[in-house]
Image 1 (cartoon, one colour):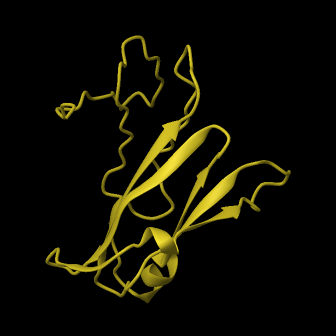
Image 2 (image 1 turned 90 degrees about the horizontal axis):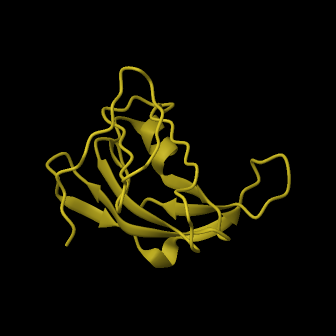
Length: 141
């Protein structure tokens, strides 16, 4: 995720990022969190020791679902936020699990991407008529 905070309402909305996950079936990693000025110079970086996990109280029933709470340091109007997260499904799976991803957001978004890595042969998908999946030019390291 890369975003630009325009005013104080953006600071309020993005001073803490929350990512839902299921600890019984997935692992989640914050690879990088940076706050940058308009020129792209890093002003602050997130520290894993500041991140913590909360119970997901937004659900109407008790579940094991959790929320990774990520405070964003040094955020102010005009800054950019860059957040990179990796999620890993646990266990052995004979089939790719159902995954629902909504590309729409409650705030203006320039681009929304879902990236899948691995053998995608036989992967079934459904999307709006105007959208088509696109193969990435990224190669494995």
